[in-house]
Length: 288
Image (cartoon, rainbow, N blue to C red; front, side, top):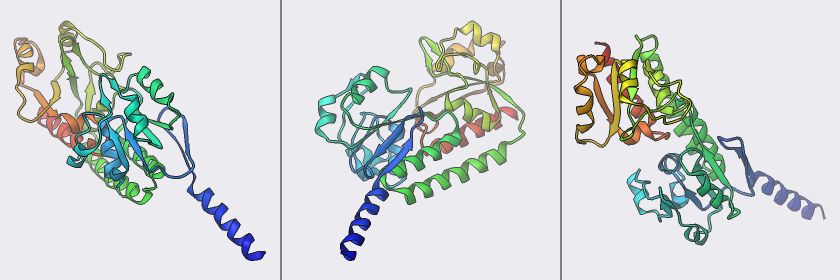
């Protein structure tokens, strides 16, 4: 009887240990009976996060634009900007779906949640939020050791950036994310925090909208030291043409226009520190 009781207690303890629970970035508690074995990623940075912590093998479905690391291109696609294939998602039998609170349309997220599958939402506002997400995903996927290693590497690199650029002369920046209509970002966007780490100041940081529309006159009135955007390597510089005609703009006078690597600076994943290095180097040039 003692042996049976001991075995029963052992099984019960194992069950308790297998259960995992974390809060996501919008405050919802995600509880799983055991670490996830089949995960669907609804954002490129989520896919990168999972591969970074050693959980890439658990991804059974991802959005069309999940393209890094290269192995991610082999994952089954479940949709993209125009919507998700709910039937395909259901057929893949995920036990966890990881989305993007501000990048996935609310209507689509509601449809996903209606499937009854746990949904963990990410939304990093600061560079320092990224490693915390890695650790939470490590808990949910049973990859705590890999997550701890990835988080430490990220934090170490971020700390180095902060030490290097602390106290630098502020540089006022207009960050262009679209040209027609002309759009930028506010201080809630993680790119603005990258600027802050580098000693940059977002000239439209106090805007209410995450991605506010602005006009040329507003940019001219703000008169930034630097105009930045992001894009693919070798991308044409057509976006510069409208700005170069404004001779009273400080950025034009000093030829301070920079294109940053799109994916590393825009995705709130482990490569964000690489994007941070690129931005910091650009702003350092602007100070010279």
